[in-house]
Length: 218
Image 1 (cartoon, one colour):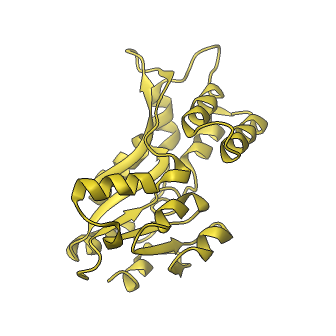
Image 2 (cartoon, rainbow, N blue to C red):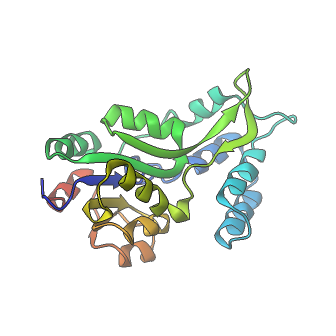
């Protein structure tokens, strides 16, 4: 491993898994009103509401008969995710090279922790739900990662590991990864979904396999 880089951080949706948003997956499953989904997102992006409030408002769209869904339904909705080609082999090789690996996602811990366990990724920053004693979702959320401020989570991990951000590599695919790209030593846009993230990346990779990153990671 290069003496310069020691930690590699992945976005999840669209980077480690093919699905571009677990939130979109859940909205389809629970048949959310598309207009309200769009309005909630616009309010967040315009700065009118916090990310925690965005999560709470989206959660309200899943209510049926004045009741939130059971956590088992959320798991059912997310169980059909597909890993990006080359994910297992890439993480295995990165660990061989001595890298510490992490996921930082605005998505859900239910999925992120499962993926981390399967791939052997050590650290996970993700959002989640709080349930009642019977396993039904409540209005309370675990807001750990603000998508527009993922850099904060990298700063936290940097302090925890006592490793400078200059020794971090960040890999993502959308504008929500921009705050990570701005503070790390090396940023990689993997199959970028928008122009802003592509323009702000040190390296741009367009490939159907994550193995391609190994050509650029020391």
